[in-house]
Amino acid sequence: MQKKKNTQEMIMDPYDRYELMVNGTVVKTPIVLASMAGVVDAAYALARKEHAGMVCIGGYSIDEATLAASRLLVEAGRDEFLTDDPVAEIRAQAEMLAESGLVVAVNMRGSAPESFAAAARALGPGMVYEIDAHCRQEPMIAAGCGEALLKNTEQLEETVRALKAENVTVSVKIRAGVADDDRALAQALWHAGADILHIDLMDFGHTKLRQIRNACPLILIANNSITSFSVVKDMLAHGADMVSLARHADPATLADLDTKMAAYADETGWYNAPKQLCRGGDIRSLTFCCMPVKNCPLIPSLEHLGISRNEFMSIKLDGVKNTLIEGGENTCFGSLTWCCKSSTPCIFRNMALQQVGLSLPDYMRYKRRLSEKLMKRVFEGDAFYATE
Image 1 (tube, one colour):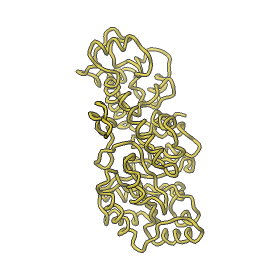
Image 2: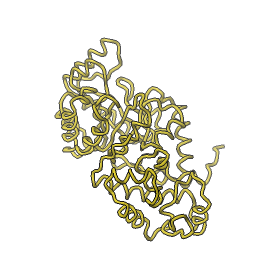
Image 3: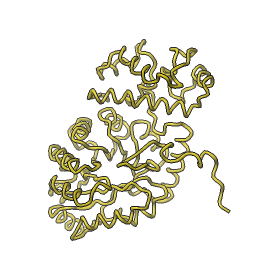
Image 4: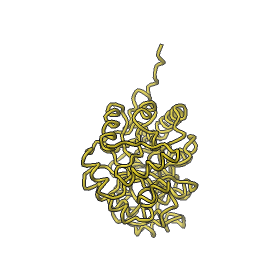
């Protein structure tokens, strides 16, 4: 007999749980299957589709220079996708994934912006186009792609613009620590039109992720050593919207992460809520800050952002107007807008929530809305929050 699902599992659909969309499609879980040349194709993704929300098939070399590099890599014993017609092969793979429930991205390696634009024109907007600025194999670097683009950021930005001119969703896969300044690179790619930044964090961990989160409003995918839910939570709390797995993407690991992420999202109400600012959180955590009346990390943060204390208070108060967290006269500052993260014990906040009939997860959903309004102000002003 099939085990009956609990009420929460039956009610909570993927959008309500994560509120995450990519390329106009709801992402059912923030777990991404990262590309691995010669390995990640439709068959690979279909075998893991139950516990993934997005797949990056490829990498596929899409022009003669990168195809020649792929042949050299095969001769050296590496796996590669070799085909005389990359566009036809990518189209065939995407068609096999059409009913999979996965958001499909294609990781591409090209030697010139027009190579990417030509592929997008031929294949259309039904998938995400991921620029491979990550591969560090010498033949690929010699062909002008992979990590070479992190040293030639003008060409990388031009490639993003060429793809956006085809009206498609653009991801850029980078390796942290290769460019001169990853924060400046993130801002440049955002301004060029990128939608997603897929970051191999190498050994930098969440510190680098937080820096990039504070520099741009792009969807961030954290990659490298995602092997346990404790690592996942750390990435989410420091700015990741999704996490990706490559060699560790076995079905058992994916199932474990997916189950624990869903439970955590339902329990907290905001699956990637940041740590509080005073505990090392990224700038999304301004939503949890109290009034700027004491000497704490909030004050220098506002100064970095070019936001006055009065403006900050106005944004927060206007952001909760006519909502259930507008009130709370018995809280420290007379409104739930100034209250802390739900994981911080507070009898006054909880009493105020009880009075208006609001659960802690729903409180966090309101805080997420408020954070989005704050981030809109930050990035519309194009502030560069250069914090360590």
